[in-house]
Each structure stands twice: as structure tokens, then as C-alpha cells.
Image 1: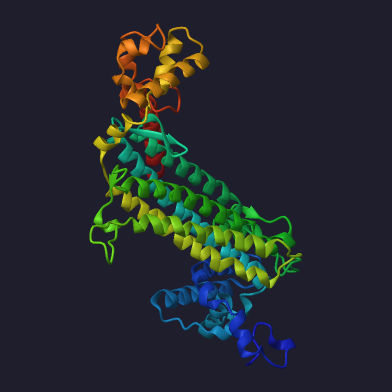
Image 2: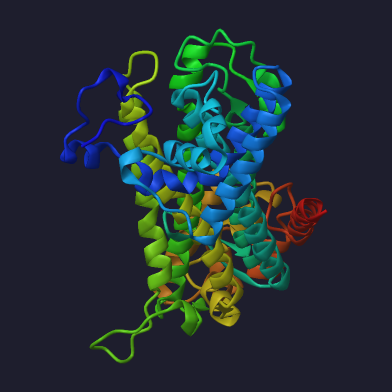
Length: 463
């Protein structure tokens, strides 16, 4: 194989064919083409401003890169694996279009800082799109919650019925998880949007570059203070992968509940046909395959995070070829996170809630036991004693095969004389929900306040 034109002067022959296949990255890093061209155009404009290139040369390079971008968009661009990566493919085609001036584009930079900028732009664009999708999903959840503010279901701990909560409150818990994800992405983006250009291979360059202006040109917030850190840093990818992993974890938790709720033994929801599949042998089956796949694909993003952590854990400064392994994992994670957010929003929009079944479940399992204990506290009984008395009431109801509210007043007074008729309204599951108006609680005012905050946040993003 011929030597690579970008570095082959030192070599009498090129890499073996198997080595070339093993080391190429153009098969996947061609996805960085729009970002590479943006970075190269910013670099060319800076070179012209600094007098390193003439204004005419800068213009030729920028316009030539526009032509390359159009070829790529239209599908006419021919990718050549022997040129190794997206950067050399674009530079080679640029030189074919504009002539020898194309060879001047790489002045003052290395592929080390070039790829760093291109990939940061790609990650930045990806996280910004995740934010759009997260906000849309939060808006969808808030809308569904608003429609179900008056419906109740069993809230669980240890997956055991615990206390009644409003369906809106339950759903909004996921909205707040996603809202944190959005804020986490915002914080990560501040560090992603730091330009390494100007670091060159690792030590900077002798050319009078203005890397700050390049950062501003591409919409970044600053540059690295240390050139060796600039070309070897992949913290920005790790942070992005962690953010994606946490988004998928939150979606997976929601999927788990949807899968359980769709089981006829729960019967809380009905998934639409468009987000379900059937069985090849059991005609009655309606499987929540979409939710199951989303739950499973969380592992893909977790794996990408762990894979890159393993890559960087023992790398000496500065750039090492190991860092080529940063892209495929993130690109797969980007696809997984983006499609999962989009599909979840669609799936939720078509779910039917069986609110009668949910309320019926609230009247099983003694979810109002805490209400009885609190009632007794209101009668002046210490909570630990009230808890003990209520436990006896639950045991009595279990023996009789009835609910707490179905116990006769005489039976309750047999446990403690301070029970009165006013205990029965307290034991109503809906009353239990209405009474919990502490900030963040499941009461109607608290839920309304949550909805107001989320709606205002969603509206602010739409402006």
C-alpha cells in the first residue's frame, strides 16, 4: 500500500492492508464531516485575519469547503479509506477543487487538535438535540399529568403498596428526573464547548494564531489553558456519556413501570397497538417490546461509558491513538438516547390509563394504615403507640378478610377506646391524597404547583 500523503515522507512503504483496515476510522468518523468543515472554515478565516494566509487564500478555502460540504450532503462525495479519516478525506478533496492553496489549510494545526475540535462540535450538537427531546418529553408528561390530577393509584416502596398518591404526582416524578437531566446537559455543555485548536500536536505552534477567535467563531466559550491537556482530554465525552447513561436509566425506570402496569394482573394501562407486538404462538399476547428494548438499550450507553473510561484510565500525556476509540461508542449512544427519547414521547402519547383499576387497587392492601395512625396521633397518642394500635387493626382486618374502613366502630374501640366515627372519612384514599399538601407532596395544591413550574419551564424553552 502507498504511504499516506499526510505523513508518509518518513516511510518507504505504507501500512499492510490488514493494518490499514484495522486503523482506518473514516467508516464512522465521516459523521463528523459537517463539524470538521465548520472548524476548518473558522481556522481558515483566522489564518487570514492573522496574515498567515492572504484574504484571498482564506476566501478560497472557505468557499472550497462549502463545495465539499455540498458534495457530502448530496451524496456525491467519494470517501477513500486509504486516507484514514474524515479530516484527510475533506482536505484531499478540497485540494482537488481549489488547487495547492488547499494544502495550506493545515497550517498551524495538527490532526490532534483538529479532531478534538470536530468531535467537540459533534458532541455539542448532539447534547443540544438531546435537550430539545428531553424538553418535549417533559412537556408530554406534564400534559398527561394535568389530565389525571384527580386520579389516584397505589404508591409503592419495595414494590409493595404503601400509600395512595395521585397519578399526576407519580408521573411528574419522571418529569423532574428529566428536568435534572436537562440541567445536567447544560452544565456539561459549558465544558464541551472549549476549543483545543491552537494546541497543534501537543506543544502549541510557532505561528501567531488567535485560537480565542476560532472558539468564538464556532460558538464555543473559550480555549484550553494547557496544550497537552487540550489534545488528550476526553472528559467532555465521558461527561456526555454519563449524562446519556442517566437519561437512559430514567427512561428505563419508566419503562419498567409501564411493563408492570400493562400486565393484566396490574391492568393500570393499555399500550397502543403501535407500540406493542404480538406472539408467534400465543394469539392473546400483547407484548410491551418497545419498552423492553428501551430498558435493554440502557446497557449500550452504560457500556460506551465504561468502554471509554477503560480507554483513558492509563494513557500518558499527550495524544495517543487509543483515543480514536472515543467516537463509535458516543455515536451509538447518541443514536440510542435520541431515538429513545423520541419513541418514549410517542409511546406515552398513546397510552390509555385504567384509572378505575388504579383506584380499586388503592382500596386493597391497607394503604390507609398510615392515615389511621395519624388519626390516632391527632387524638393525643404518641406515634409509636399509634403505629402499634394500627398494626393490630390491620391484623384484625386481615383475619376478617376486610379493609380497615370496613371494621365496625366497636371492633376498633376494642383495640383503643379513642376511636370515634370521625375515623372513617380519614380512611378514604382520596382524603389521604388531599391531606398531603407539604411542598413536593401528592396533594392537589402541590401537584398544581409542580405543573405550573414545569409548564413555565417548557414555555421558556419554546421562546
